[in-house]
Length: 590
Ligand code: H79
Image: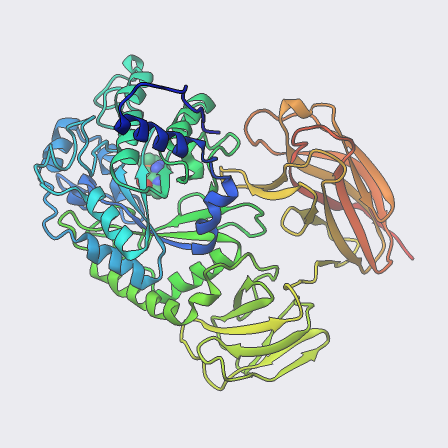
């Protein structure tokens, strides 16, 4: 929470001062926006442009004949080849982005259908791409370029209705003697990290948030070391721009989320099922900063398919371009973005403002959801011209291609599965979107079929239906779990269809904080109860598997398995990954 105090009443001052005080008192009495209010645009907009641009763009993947291997990050060149600060600074001095055109960059983002834009104001190399008074190591003072990219992009974004954000590497700094990461020029043991934070990192963040109009997002990276330091950065953002969002990487990746939303790992894709706000930053080739060697460009189809997968799993897509040092955007990425934009022009309705789909991946593609509509994204056209929508239990009222809404498609059902008669040909080679109007919000069949009593199976976080406060989350180091359950009202359930009775060993896989030591949980399996007691696994997310005992699954149609805390604890009970059921050895005859 931001501190909000109204100042003491003053008398006997000049009118101008009184007006000024009144204005600032009014501003201060406005309540800070709630997180839901701050997140509103982010949840709707779904698609943003990431721009990695700095002195590393001038190296373009090569230093003194040494090449950054394709497939790795070219913006890490300074660290990869332990380039001395003096050498790196010489290249930085030569950066003259004479072809930089903020309005053209923003127009490209807009034409692609992107709604927000995030520029690297300072990456790990420590070079500021704006006029900084805190450090002369910036494009204007150091490279003597007379234009400020942050200022120009902020202005161009405002004009075009694109939300502008800045990337700021707050922990890493390979130029500052006390920053994190450069142990080739500087002696690690002599570093005073606090001094770096106070001299450079925090004051530069203040500059960015006070000189360039509205900043809608600060995108931190590499995770600050302690919750106390993390909070100091969050406080600066909230103090200067109460509406500004803060990405998940502001804090230590091993610790609980402190930012506004979760970031997947770089280029990361979750299995699905997340019940929290998230975004994945992704590259168009295999590097973030420009590399003249990397021609492994994703096709428009790949970008569209990724976007649909991300958005269909409830996330945002922050797609990167790596301009050259002179400001030129590599032409393959421009061509791809334009093709994506043409698709978005027609099909954007199936992306913006959508939520995660309850349907899993289908043989022909994926789906996104808005209200009572499900959008079927057909990536591969079924040979028989019939689209089978596996798992959808709703009544379908109407179907039409988003590209030709007046063309109503014939509907039928086969064994409970809705069928749609497709047009003769795809309307788009990459993704033809078919909209289905349903009788209500899309619902999917949650049934898990247990194949036989000799085969083990997992009831994992992904297949669970959660209720109460229990939610599916990303653990920030690449794994997923259910968390936030504090009492018996918070649960995970699974519906099983057991084809053959059998006896199973039950195990649970979780991690837990020490505060949960001794707390109980209950697993109800078709009326049989198995109980367990939590033992903590430490501060990170070290998952362990614990034996809970045996159960017998009868062959009785659908059967419910439910996991819940035994009593109210007031804090998260466990970070749950799965119940593991394995055959107990002998077959049951029924
Ligand atoms: O800004 C982009 C990356 O530079 C940044 N995040 C995105 C958005 C990032 N910060 N840290 N990492 C990525 C982890 C990267 C580690 C690696 Fe490497 C860099 C792998 C290969 C190059 C360091 C150097 C580890 C191995 C060699």
